[in-house]
Image (cartoon, rainbow over all chains, first blue to last red; front, side, top):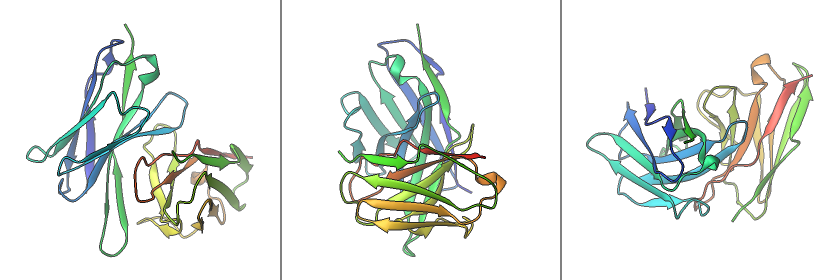
Length: 120
Length: 108
């Protein structure tokens, strides 16, 4: 079955860059849209952005100036970089993938999430 | 940017009761709205997409309706495992695919 696994440092210093990678198994990386969503402690879900296998991206307007996403189809992984982090970027970061089938169905998969804390 | 407003913030019901959750968009989404369920310590799970289509494996007690700016998630008869937080998400043509602030469904 499709599995996504986030990987990256759990602690990042203020003003530095947060970097996470999501490893994909059980799915063709070229068939899905891939994205990042975060959830601050005790808060709701915030959509960060998405990337397609072609490299095309869309980002949340509120984070666009600080976000970079990349994808490596040969390694079946995609990555998030968020620069100039502050306390407000402390959150559980989820990677996710979705794909519409010709039947009209929507497949949607999420990683388990990884907590990133911004602190000196 | 589209804003999604969910109501109520908290809904207290008993098992077996019917739950009705609302999501209102600041502009028309046509029929492109999704609903997610999230339990503590878990990733969100897709329940409904395109306003009314159940995702694979989702029980029939979950149903979605609505179009334009007003959408509803209904759980016909609550099971103990349904008590969780529910989020709507706009999935219209173009990102950002923002989420509503969530409705907490708690046991009365």
